[in-house]
Image (cartoon, rainbow, N blue to C red; front, side):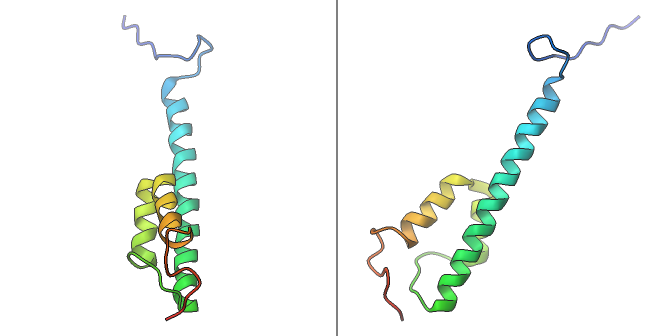
Length: 91
């Protein structure tokens, strides 16, 4: 009586929501791994007594979790590139 069809990719029967769920899952994993790395690096910088710009490790973690690669790039530019005038100096 009712003909309910799901959108498919290239006619092979794979529903679109599965494809998007996989893409979202991979994106979340990438964001999570970048966030963990940024957290550990920021925490390590603070333990070494390096002068780091910006907020603490927890704020960087959540910002990277939301912003992903873009925030991780901003973190690197702020704290590890030659744009940081305090690179290598301690408190």
